[in-house]
Length: 77
Image (tube, rainbow, N blue to C red; front, side, top):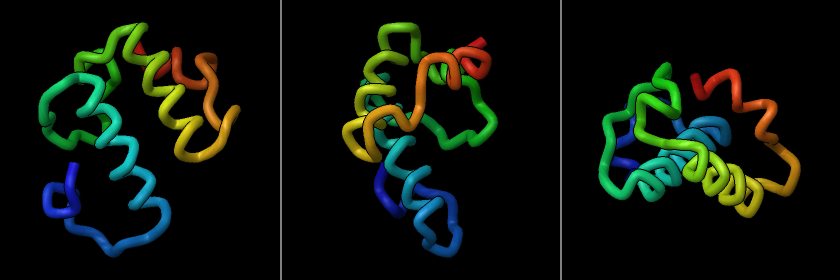
């Protein structure tokens, strides 16, 4: 997602991280998806394989071990 499609908010490191993760989700899904902060990964069309890819990309971008499957699994249902 480009900055123009992001919610209109003051730029902060946290907001930048949200934009990066949202962009990762769009890349995994393979198409633009509407920004819905409370949507589950399943609602976005991300399955277990997509979850693994998302965790890998988050680790590459922000640091290994930052997020685990256990952290995200309750959010996936």
